[in-house]
Length: 501
Image (cartoon, rainbow, N blue to C red; front, side):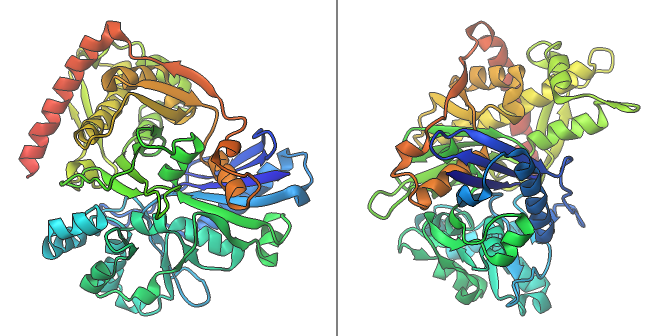
């Protein structure tokens, strides 16, 4: 018996098939080979065509099945992980009316800020645990104001994972955690955020019906099965945003447990059982995947938009020499040649849209202290990795102020956590032990599908085969050096924040 998981990212679509009885990865593939394009028609905009996601879902599935020596008739359930906070709008024929406005798009910041002020910060934080900010509801309001002809044709507004589920099953639905990530959930009334919809003048009819996160949410249609090379009738039994799903994939389900990612964006995500919030909304509280009405659980998320995308930019623009482009492993080795603190070179990695931890300011990526007679490529590469770590630690300090305990953090052994420098810096600066596991988002989605379809009797059974591959403790010998470098970096950041406020 096998389980299929999709991870619908902004860089690629990944598909993995797991053997349910052992948790063993049978095959895994992603598409495209290079990163998907993010359309930026104007500064601060970020869009992708949802049909391109589906195209690469098909291609990733084909590549994965070509590797897998299995009877596809034994695939019993499908789960979906997806990039959070995006907006996909479709007409009654389920056709996308415009490109998706994705997570790092900044166009709706002022709309969310106005709603936060007009409704009142206390009301917003009490009911939504967040400012409407730059989230899905505010993006839908932007469409209403700026593209009224398109808005008039909308049948349903959904998240990226809801769109892929629709393509698989023909059904349109969402989840309570999904509504919370769009700031469309009222925690106080345990219902859709009618007061925000009313303030924006948005129709509640545009919001899909809710299904439980772990449940049979539909089955793969005959047409979708034909496109994917699968059998029709396979249960679609789980969907979750990428960061809650990353936590799930690492078995982070209980208060006090934390997960991290360092892909296109960088995230630390901690679990709590109280509806806490940051008054400045620099970190955000959402419904966690295993939340129930009887046992409420919340995921507190800090996000840095410019993480892996900064590393990718450096690889394309600095790590290229004629026809040769450095691998990420070669970049990591070069970065390690520079000392801690990069001899005064500082990078503030905020070049991928408005940053929530900066109260939705869009500072851009800032470089400070560059000296032509001292600094070289290794310094630049190290300063970038340290800058990402320092930005994440800035957010971790906010989480600690909220009462989140940060002693150990779990992450997949992938993306920037493959860099020894990055993991050492992260552990040493945060003071947290880093545990790296043999998993990723697509595997987590497959395990979630096993729970939702009833193949696993509970969460404990779902994590068979999950193992910790590596543990990185803080480097006590370098603590003082890292703390000095972080102090210099945070001083520069605070100067920029004062200048822009």
